[in-house]
Length: 464
Image (cartoon, rainbow, N blue to C red; front, side, top):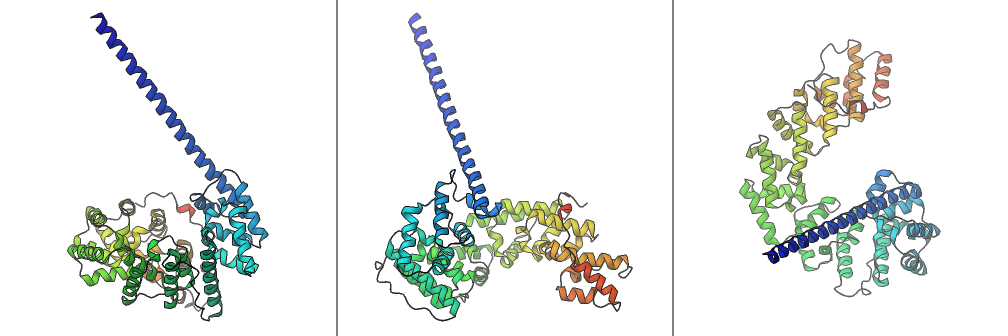
C-alpha cells in the first residue's frame, strides 16, 4: 500500500514538473515572439524615418513602402543610394524606383546592382537613357541573366522612344532568349499587346509582372482573341483586367460562373454587360456572392432590388461584408431610414464604397449647417460623392451670401440645381445674372476664396 502511495506521489510530481517545463517553454516562445514583433516594429520605424530623411518621401508613402521592405541599419540602403546617385540618378528618379521596387534598398550594391549598370553602359546606354528606363521599370533589375535583362531593357527603351516620337518601334529579335521560355513568351505576348495599341503605362507593368498567365502561349492567344471580340478598348485598364480574368479561368469555370448568376435571376447578356463594366466581378466565388446578397437582405433590400444594384454597380459584389455593414450602419446612424437607404443605394450604389467619415461629414454639413432636410440627400445622393471643399462649400457660401442680402428669400433652393450642375451653370444662375457689378464681384470673391477647412465638422456624431 505504501509502495502504491509512493508511486502515485512520484507520478504527481513528475506531472507537475512536466507542466512547469511546458509553461516555461511557452513563456519562452511567447517572449521570443514578442521580441520578434518588437524587432519588426523597430525595423519599420527605422525604415520610415530613413526614407523620409534620405529621400524626402512623405510619411504616408514611407509607411506604405515599409510594409514591403524594412531594415534596421542603413548600410545597404546607403550603398544603393550612393551607387544610383553616382550614376546620375536624381532623388526624383530614386523615389520612383523605391516606390515601385522597394526591395532595391536591400540589394547588394556592389555585387548585384553595380555590374548591371556597368553592363548597360558598356552597351552604349547614356546616363539620361539609363535613368529614364530604370526609373520607369526598376523591377527589371531583379532579372539575373544578362541576355534576358538586355532584351527586356531594349524593349522598354524602344517603347519609351516610340511613344516620344509617335513613330513605330522595331521588332526585337528574341533569338537570344530560349525558345518557349517564360521570358520569351512574356515578351512576345507583350509585343502582341503593343501591336493592339495598349499604351506604355499599362504595357510596361505587364512586362515585369509576376503573373504566370502572361507567360503562356496558346491560352494567351485564345484569351486575347476573346477580349478583343468582346469589344474592350485596348487603350484602357479594363482591357488588361479583362484579359487577366479570361486567362485565369478555364472556359468551363467561366460558364459555371455565368450559370450561377443566371440562377440568381440575371440574363446571360446582363452578366456580360456587368463584366464589361467591371471585369474583376467574375473573380467572386458563389459563397461570396451569396454572402453579399444575404447582407443586403438583412437591411431590408428585396431580391429584385439587389439584382438591380449589382447590375448598375457590379463592384458592389466585391465589397467585404465588413465594409458594406460599416457603410450602411453609417447611413442609418445619421438618421436615414431603411426606405431611405434603399433609395440611396438605387440612385448611388457606390456610396457604400465611400469613406464613412466623409459621408458623415458631408451629411452633417448639408443638414446641420445648411438646413437642407435629410430627404434632400436621399433625392440627390450624388452629393455624398462631391468634394466638400472644392464644390459643396464654395457654392453654399454663395447661397449664404445671397440669403443674407435677401436675394433668395428665406427658403433654400433644391440641392440638385445647386450642387448637381457644372460650375459654369451654377455661376450663371446664382452669380453672373445680377446687374449689380459690385455684387457680382463680391459673390465671385466668395466663390473663389480660400477653401474652407472642414476639420470643424469632424467629430459630429449625429445630425438629429
